[in-house]
Amino acid sequence: MKIAIAGGSGFLGSALTEALLEKGHEVFILTRKKKESGRNGLTYVQWLTDGSRPEHELVGIDVFINLAGESLNSGRWTAERKERLLTSRLAAANEAVWIMASMEEKPKVHIAASAVGFYGTSTDKTFIEGSPSGNDFLSDVVKRWEDASMKAADLGIRTVLCRFGIILDRKEGALPRIALPYKMFGGGTVGSGRQWVSWIHLDDTVFGILFAIENEGVSGPVNFTAPEAVPMKGFGKTVGKVLGRPHWLPVPGFALKLLLGEMSTLVLEGQRVMPKKLLDTGYNFRFPELEPALKNIYKS
View (cartoon, rainbow, N blue to C red):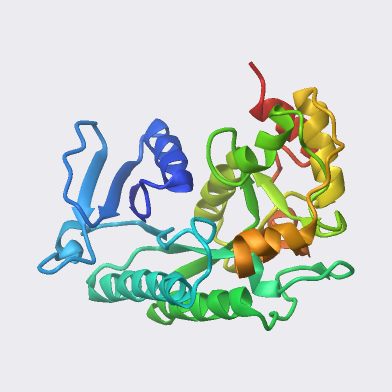
């Protein structure tokens, strides 16, 4: 297949690109800067720049994947940055839909990034795809992001909204930051420890997307989380166990709030999210439980 990926050079996009190329697919990465790939099956296409006409270079695309958007955890949430978090997602989603609308032959599938932040936060509720949205900053961003992406469905394109949990990887994402204190023998419970961590191994994220592409019964919002969400205290203890380090030095919530401001909600609050659609449609998780997942990530 011919597959376009916006955000294909990022953390998840890079892993997904590798998997697609290994399977023999042709990949077109949408980027603001024109590049030469130097690799068979990989082409870079400019978009979101003056004069770029990506629709002319994406003729015959079977799948359009949009993972683009400024990272939520790359800086303090000032008013200016919160605006960028929203506008970067809306700009990418609207441009993706415009490109698909411009194509005479439409892609069969549109895979769009989203987040479990849609549901808001809770320590006692369990969320599935049909659960209502929350009413905080993140849930508002995600709702508007999803609304923009779902316009592709009006074009007759099967659209999947990937509500990602915390994607676990050894080198990138949230896990290296969580693991660092443990490696320095200073790990412990963050905040109350009761907040839920809805996580997923990077491999299951990649293969879950491939599953969604290949299965016509998958559409609309899909939770990309492992079946076993865990409280933060248990998550930290498991990280310490796998790394052979103690879990003893707590990180009080007020300290993180002083350091990170509103962005501290990413680690101090959470939600228990279950991947009902993936399970119901037959996806078999490679890493449904946390300890085996971490052992795989940190294997020598």
